Image (cartoon, rainbow, N blue to C red; front, side, top):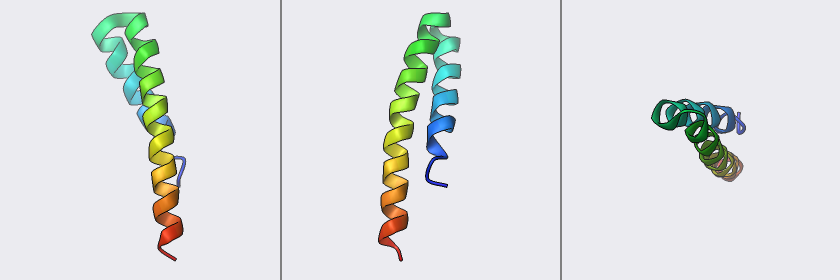
Length: 52
């Protein structure tokens, strides 16, 4: 459950980047999406642990 943001943001970033700038945009979008997904994963895990 905590890992869900990683593939979602990765794929959304890839798709948006590809739509904006082709292959170069896809690489940048995937990288930004991966970073946001990892941050979201950490945030979700932190929230789940704090609500015992």
